[in-house]
Length: 419
Image (cartoon, rainbow, N blue to C red; front, top):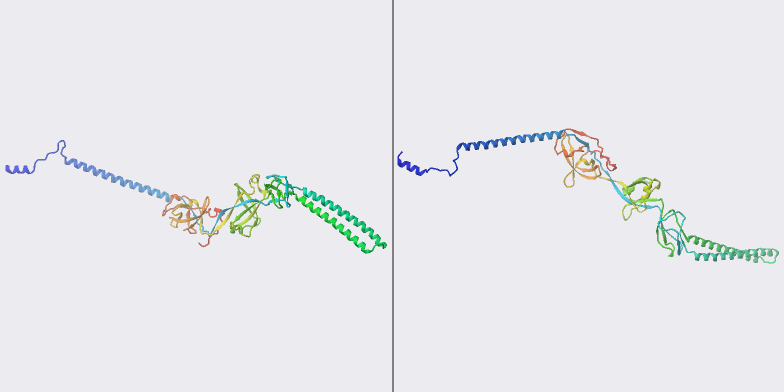
């Protein structure tokens, strides 16, 4: 090669020098790095593929277990209505409670009993001042004695005149006059006797007596008070004779029978009472119908007798028929849903889980009456619904006896035929 050409080639391609301290990268080291990266990528893909297969296998095992798990179902029985228990309240009262006072005007001289004391029938409770009546009695006694004396004198005069008339010494007219005088004297004596008897009644009424056995629950006035006729002195409550007055809904009140026994509750005490009467008019204030229940003290325990007193509240549980189509299901069959609705799980003809949206009309501690997209004869899952999902296939379906249809609220629901 000519020397001039070699010089030009060296000028156009100057020699390359590596930076100080760094050796040039060799081709075999690049190849090794590439192989390492590819190996790690293949290993990662293999691990991911193996993991997915394990997860799928695990899911299949779980699904197999869920499909083979026992699913308890019961047949839905539809009803045209249901009975809803309702607690109504009333008040205990005495069969007899009276505000009593004197029938006469006068000054209250003495109170023989105090408030809270038990009394017997006929017991004297208070007395009026009878000084004026005593003076009047003496006056009437004197008048009576005078009238009797006049009557005796008139009778003696009549006897003498009769003898004289028979002898012809006195005319018949004189005898008639004497007989008239005797009649007038007897009448005056009778009048005085009647007035004295009337005064005796007033004296008797000056003592206030208990009209029946009971308890003095209130004292209105004190001794020394000037009373008007009929002004109340005491309030007396009959003893051992209580009743309960309860306002009932129309459909319940008219369903009661006189003499029927019903269960009442008060102070956590349960006792029996008998229907005494049912009003034939509506209470204008409460729009209910009042029913009176007699409480037999002989049927109460000692504790109940001590607790049940007049003025206490008493409750009665009545059955209200509700005209709503639905079915009874156990609470364990319900799962919460959206917008206040609930979900039932049912098993269809293909043993597949389906859902039904329902609304709870009434529920107690164990069962609920529901209405909604349910039909008579469907198989509702009654337990273990947390293990199920919609469209899940199940194979081990066990039908259990429907024990919740009439269990709640003493159900008297009428089954809908042909639904």
